[in-house]
Length: 220
Image (cartoon, rainbow, N blue to C red; front, side):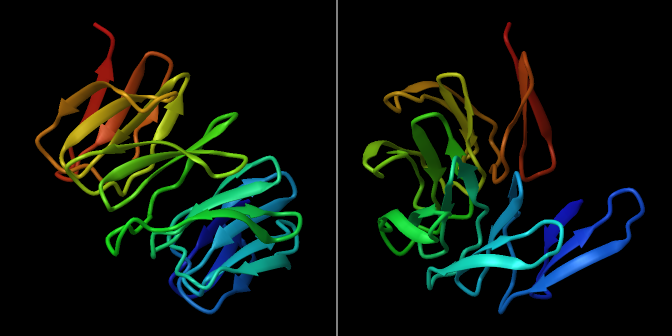
């Protein structure tokens, strides 16, 4: 199945082989973020403030949590938890079994909009914000481990690769940080704002700048 949200307030399900409509689920506002799919459920947030869990076969909603804030980012799933940011800059860990907030981190300021998808490792979760910071939290209790400031808003998602955190910023730079302590390992100034997420292969990574240039990086 292809699962996609829309500004028509619906989550749509389409057969990828035929393009045939299968089902749709109505919400109360825009569905901006990409749904997350894991096993026998779909998890997505909406601008109506709800995080929903949906049966992928029937499109029926299993349960939901009213967070009361715009959710424009996409959730990341790990074990029985969803990690998701809000337009108000609050970052949540949601217990999907009970649909309750396990922990939440408040916004730094009024500019702390979160549009990115969190990146999750075995013990850490990393998220960028439009307040120009990349944050790393302990998955289990939400304790902040480190933060790293750039000179531009961070709207694209970070990628965790081994012990590295890779992301771009609207300051035009590509960054690689140490996952353990947030120390800067490497950066490259593209000279153009970056609002997307990098894609990593075995020996290379690719990132797109806002003028439409696709850059590829590899070891010398």
